[in-house]
Amino acid sequence: MKILIPVDGSVNAVRAVEYGIAYAAALKVAPEIFLINVQWKIATGNVKLFINQETINEYYREQGAAALAQARVKMDEAGIAYTFHISVGTPAEAIVLYAQEHKIELIMMSAHGEASLATLLLGSVAGKVVQLAKTPVLLVK
Amino acid sequence: MIEMLSAPQFWVDVFKIILIDLLLSGDNAVVIALACRNLPEAQRRKGILYGVGGAIGLRIVLTFFAVSLLALPYLKLVGAFLLIWIGIKLLLPDDEHAEGNIKAETQLWGAIKTIIVADFVMSLDNVLGVAAVANGNVWLLVFGLLISIPMIAWSSQLVLKLIDRFPIIIFGGGALLGYVAGEMLVTEALFKPLVEAQHALHWLIPLSCAVLVVVLGKWLAARKLATAKVLDLVDEQVAAHSHDKSN
Image 1 (cartoon, one colour):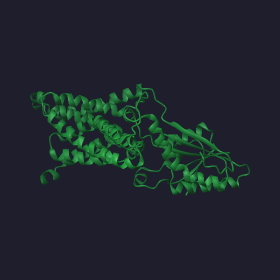
Image 2 (cartoon, rainbow over the protein chains, first blue to last red):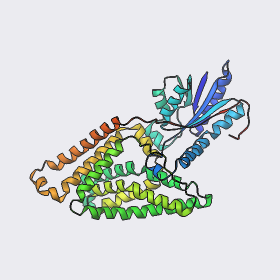
Image 3 (cartoon, rainbow over the protein chains, first blue to last red):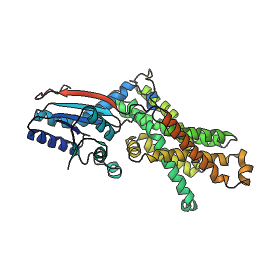
Image 4 (cartoon, each protein chain N blue to C red):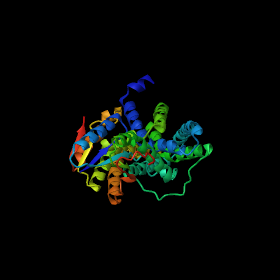
């Protein structure tokens, strides 16, 4: 079974990873676990006129690595094999696209990610993933 | 001042300015954050501070420059067409520029120069939009400037999230820029006799400009090939029971 766990560096996302680890332990055959973090594509056309692509990618990589760090520690502690990935784009769409490309069978994520005023007003990534995904989505409360 | 605050038109203009500032300021914040990345740690804060300061100063100068330019005959005509173009460009999908040969700045002054030059180029649309809405009202101009400043230094993620959640906002922005362009045309001295004679033109022209921007923008956007919207940056595997943190 292939399980995708999107993380955004929040406490709730780490809880989803912990849940995933426990869930994996309960399965007869150890699942393949994929971690993904999506960075908003903040550097549009105009920005590229002034900042080179390498600097922009380095920024995404650094932010993505920071968001994944805690989740990776949990996985390492549990001693489970996993794949981690950083995408740049619109979070929900990138998550669903990755799930399709890697034939993911279950997406497991926190119902609420980064709690901010913006999320409160704009709705969560989880809601949009549920709407777009073709696979079952497990929301960790 | 007080009478102005109780006039509904004033608040409509304030709303227009906020929307224009919001939609046209995002890039600047990103350049400021990224331009200083390659500086030595100790100089980063300095770079950001001087860069933001310079960008604000530049924007004040540009705004008042734009206002005095728009007072000249015929230039409102030019400004209106520029605004229509800016509105259409807002509706088009992001251009994937060929990778230029830009070198990363590792010197403090180099980074500050990048921020200021970028702000000059990228704030022109914003300044023109605000100047058009303000139509000579100094209070509105100052307000537009004050609103745009936190947005220069702010993360543009909020704008992206907003557009993701409410895609209509981008069409609203395009239509608004078209409308404002139309209002500018109406106030152009050249057309004064015509507009005075046909009073309906006061709202008919702005409305047609708004429709023009949205229709043309949508049509051009549909013609553009949809580029890959997701970029895969890192894809790595970690073996079981490996406590190696090197990657």
